[in-house]
Each structure stands twice: as C-alpha cells, then as structure tokens.
Image 1: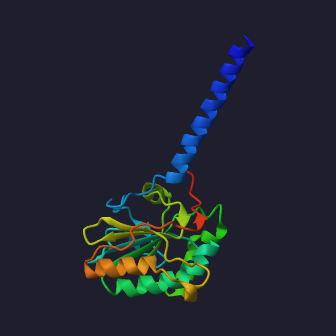
Image 2 (image 1 turned 60 degrees about the vertical axis):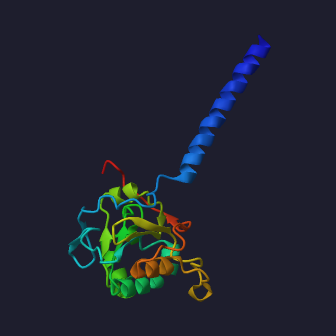
Image 3 (image 1 turned 120 degrees about the vertical axis):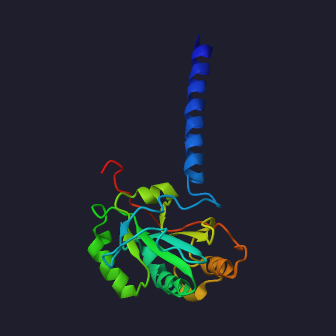
Length: 212
C-alpha cells in the first residue's frame, strides 16, 4: 500500500512538473507573428497624436511598412527613442510606411496617456503617426510583448524582420549591429533581409483588460 501511494505521489508530481514545463516552453516560445505573415488587424483605425486616424494599411509605403510597439514610460524606449525617431523619419522618406503603436493601459501607467503621447511625439519630432491601440487587441494579435518591439513588412506585406532596433539600447555610439537599419536597407533595395529575427528587449506591454 505504501509503495502504491508513493507511486501515485510520484506520478502526480511528474504530471505537475510536466504541465509546468509545457507552459514554460509555450511562454518562452511565445505566440508572436511568424515570418512571412501578414499584419493582423491592418484596417483597424487608431487615433494618432495629430488627432487623425490611421490604419496599418493606410500608412503602407511602396517598399513596405514598419510597425513598432512602443510607449512613453519604459526606460528601454527612452534609450532607443531618438533612434526610433531618426530611423522612422528617414525611411519614411525612402518609401517605407511607419507607424508606432502604444498598446499600454494608461490606467496602469499614467505616463502612457494620450496627452503624454502628444507631448512625446512633438518633443521627439516624429514625422510618422504615433497611435493608440485602444483595446490592446492589435498588440495581442501581433503577439507583441515588449516595448519597443519591431515588426517590418516588405512591399508584398510579408513579415521579414521582427525584434530589436539594434544591439545596444544604452549607448547609440557603441552599436555594432544595426538590425533594423540593415533590414530596412534590404527591403528598400529589394534584397533579402540579412537577419530576420532578433530578441526584442524592453519592458513588458501593459495590456488593457480584454473585456474593457
């Protein structure tokens, strides 16, 4: 009887560990957008800091579309923000549509309110739309989990790069690998992206409640 109880206890522990392991693997692997995918919810209207509404489709450029999930409050975003502005403004002029999306819940992070977004866009000189994902559903459909997190689509609308801006958030002068710029240069030239995926580093997206 003792041996039987011991076996049952061992099986229960193994089952719990197995479930935890599978859940851990799922969380680590993530449910993010796969390379080659089209942008989900591309026709959903979002309000930008200029008071106008935009969709991912409406900003599409002849060479492709750059979608960045960002915010105001995250220290990682603040470190990369000048580069985001510089890259977004420059490549918009080169025929790449650019849209930056804030999916954070301002009730959780007051600095991510719309009014603060307006100030940030002006201070940083964004020439591209900085918009609100009012339900966080677009972030959910993309599988975006970090701010900033980059999704770059080519002229055919296929995802060709996903990940980080570059390899050094803290020091722009110390960057050795310009992941996003290299990917953008490739799609503008009609060439394959040299590195299609990197790890997105940043703060977690503070999603709104799905029933709100």
